[in-house]
Amino acid sequence: MKAVVIGGGIAGLAAARRLESLLPEFEIDLVERSQRLGGKLLTEHMHGFLVEGGADSFLSRKERGVGLCEELGLAGELVGRRPESARSYVRHGSELHLLPEGLTGMIPTDLDSLADSTLLSQVGRERLAAEVDLPPVPTGADESIASFVTRRLGAEAYERLVEPLMTGIYGGDGEQLSLQATFPNLRALELEHGSLIRGLLAQSPEAVATRPPFVTLASGLETLVARVAEGLRHTRVVTGRAALGVRRSDHGYEVTLDAGERVHSDGVVLCVPAFAAAELLADLDSDLAAAHAEIPYASTAVVSLAYRDGDVVHPLDGYGYVVPRAEGSEMLACTWTSSKWEGRAPDGFVLIRVYAGRFGGRDVVEDSDDELVGLARDELRLLGIEAEPHLSRIDRWPLGMPQYVLGHPERLKRIESALADHPGLALAGAAYRGVGIPDCIHSGEEAARSLTESLARVPG
Ligand SMILES: Cc1cc2nc3c(=O)[nH]c(=O)nc-3n(C[C@H](O)[C@H](O)[C@H](O)COP(=O)(O)OP(=O)(O)OC[C@H]3O[C@@H](n4cnc5c(N)ncnc54)[C@H](O)[C@@H]3O)c2cc1C
Image (cartoon, rainbow, N blue to C red):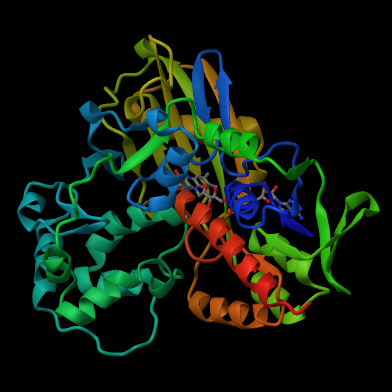
């Protein structure tokens, strides 16, 4: 008996690991197109710097991130952000404004702490405070994040505060992102409590957290990838080979790999981006493939630059800043990595990451390295940095981030109902129900579970 997992990002690795324990008698193949495992988890150690090329941390309250680290003996490696730098900024023009305290997620709920904020005008603050008396809109239709937050909290709170924070998660366009697919709880609170702010305040306080809200691994997130891979016992890990197609065969599926290899399998778990899944599924089920092809993706470039302390005028006294779309910049955010995490830069140096590329805008990943470094250096003039960087590294993520745009929930329903016709086929990864690392781990593990259940139902 055999199962094939296609895609060796964190979702595929989590799926293979879970399949090993659920189907101990199965042979498992994990097929990854690139030479390395990990997908968007990529850590580079360069001349004493620890550079994360993709994701840099994950939410601790979503169970399967910390949970998997604990199972792999990595609990002692989990670290939170440096408490002494616990503040972030929002860029408005060429000024950085402190992100106000008293946010619940992205939403300001402590209106007193907003009073001193320079980020919102008096009019913007008053409009936000008026939210508690605004009647809820009863219709059941989905709406964009921009539409929901603007109608509840006002245009200024959306543009200057919520939009850039939301972009930090989805790298997307709030005018297009589906509220239902991204933050369904916000709409539920509006309906239940008549007000978003009152709803958030009424939520029972979270149990005292045992871990900081965002965590990473001291030696970098790729340690998680390496540890999962090392722990695989009866999985044949095949890197540097692409899957080209999945078809039905007499006893299950036939997976075609490049170089013409055909692998017969009882079950298949696809853990690849939606556009890749669309190609793989084209011969098996054109509706399933079409639903995948409709999921759009945003491209991002991450420019990591290191400087000598003395070359940086700004104190870098925080985790960094976000740039609202309304600023008209291609930059999304600037993370002061060495202020945010311990051990990212050697003494006497700082490490900074600039994220470039807006969904719907110019495709920055097409730019040359020099152009991208130039864009990032222009941004860093704001921090008084004119010097040549001591070190630079570019990571491009073409079509790297799925966008849960309006219609995404309906698309997921179509995908699910089409999947019912294909016992032994399961799907996982960032394309569906959460882009964060813990969501992707959870989706891989769930796909392994559903595959196991559907195989148990297959007669014979
Ligand atoms: C720049 C950036 C920063 C991010 N920051 C964070 C963060 O700080 N915290 C957080 O929680 N999340 C973050 N994310 C999101 C998170 O990293 C990803 O959503 C998650 O890692 C995706 O995992 P995955 O396994 O679904 O997909 P991927 O990591 O995309 O893995 C899919 C794999 O499938 C392979 N593949 C594709 N087609 C084929 C084929 N035909 N045959 C074989 N293999 C194939 C690919 O090569 C790839 O390795 C970030 C994402 C990006 C792009």
